[in-house]
Image (cartoon, rainbow over all chains, first blue to last red; front, side):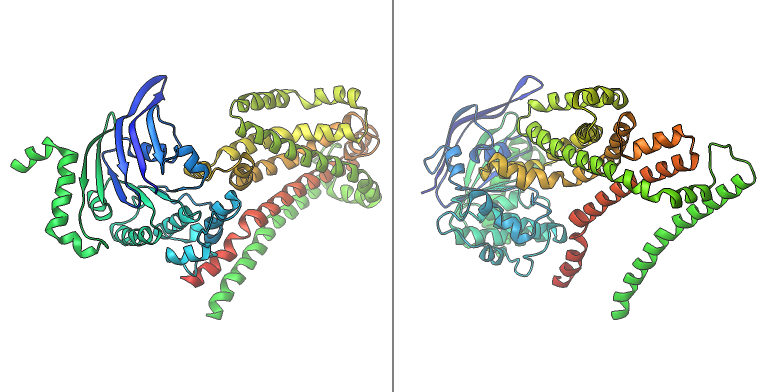
Length: 260
Length: 271
């Protein structure tokens, strides 16, 4: 189905005529229908990696396949949904009009794509169809953005720190809802985050990256049962996975602190 | 609750009345002082009494209207033409990034030619019909519009731009659904600067050569040393330019400001 393959990918940026390596030889597989998290310090290239999969950027070397296709082709087939860190809505459009935007650009629904009205219900915004983004809270705006990303029934959902700007409580609620939406739509999801708990709570597999240049440290399987529930946050199993991610992120630094 | 609903409305009405009344009172006071100063013999012969200007208006208001029509027409045509050209050039500038610097530089060059020097040359080229006056009004208004449009088109949010890329939007869709609506606030700011400029352009063109128009009426009045009539034409030009600005400001409120307040009120009902 829609497996995402990243094979020996390198990405260099040119900054002030100097070449800077943002991603250094990363190979990853995101199984079809799975939920994966990318975590790492800033500068580890996690957002860049997401933009390579979405064909916003092109890799310097290596290959990427989205359901067997090059990202450019998957993009043209509207198989990629993207949620940005800020909701990035068009302020002059209502909630409904923002969600309809992909339909207008693509010239109609792709296959049996969901109706915008149903998407509004899916993200819990019924009654706000005609509100303008400025009238919504940050969490509600991000719900609109998620609905918009799902409008063309993408096979891949790329989430670039979607709840990074929200408060802890709202973020936890949104995460629960995102998991529900992901399970209902059956997409292959990749979540970029810098919150350890969020990565563990959401993902089947957490890929830990290091910075300068961006490279893969390790991948941690999170075999907590689904559906994930808030009560799991307090279990030793959850803690175990959190510690594993933390150990991968901080390495030897962590040992020195724990001695003191 | 009904009281609460009426109060802001009444306050708004009073505020609007105050907004008109205060400047009106100042104008009336200034005119009265002006009249008094003239009657006391404090002002030179080149400054007529307000009553003399009013008298000139009574005597030649039909002349004034007759001359105002072509000025308004060429200014309006120039304004519209300048807007269309600025939108087209702006669209080219943002769709092909490399052309932006060239287009803006050309705009600067055209803008830096003194209009008063360019006008006679254009008159020679294009004849002294309305077309040359429209061209000059267009040139007068073009540069601020061009800068506003290019800036506005570039004021697109980076993430939204990436979204349009992911959606595989065409250049035209990007322009129509993203760049143009993003540019509207910038465009209106530029339109408000450009509207009086196009009136100025039409006026300069009429000074140089025209058989009808506020510009030529002004020149006639000056040559025949009809000081009150010269002042009347100046006031008429002020009126036309202010009206042009006011119409653009009104359009801006309808397009940008209009929908926001009423929707805000209904949005509150949802919460």
